[in-house]
Amino acid sequence: GETRGIRARTARLVLVNVVTPPPTPADHARGAASWPQQAEDGADPAALVRAEHAEIRPHLDHLRTLAEGAETADDAALRQRLEHVIAFLRTGVLAHAEVEEATVYPAAERLLRALGGATRTMTLEHEQIRARVEELERIAAEARYPDAARSRLARSLAALEALLRAHFDKEEEVY
Image (cartoon, rainbow, N blue to C red):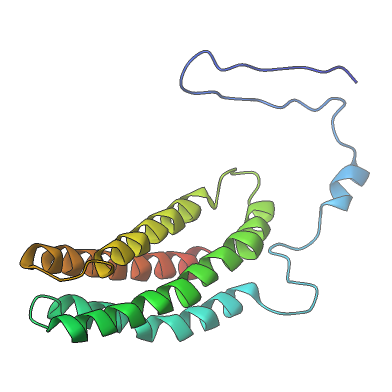
């Protein structure tokens, strides 16, 4: 019943939590549910993630083709395709990331709490994806697309496509 505190005096903090008295067999029985636990409605969370990714993955090809054609397309066509891709990224990919952060990651974190921070790396990738989408929006807002902007655009699209593919692969394999 006493309040205690711990302070890191270096860049790294290691915390050991000692529970006393030791847990009883009844304590262990309470947490002995099968693992991983299925959602109460019987839905397989991994199947749901894969299904969402299956809807998004074909659109990643648009990122690649736009990146490959960014330096040669005329301004009007480039602007139109870029607006379409950014709209998809905002309403499809970033919306998907927000739902995962609100539902999938907390569930995975609860299951993997012994490891701590199990989903933090994926959240960091979501932050990188958001930053790339914002970069695309800044480039798209330019009135013209000089060669330098087209090169930045091509690199940004290619990097975003690679990041998304790797992110989806990791989610499907790990979670």
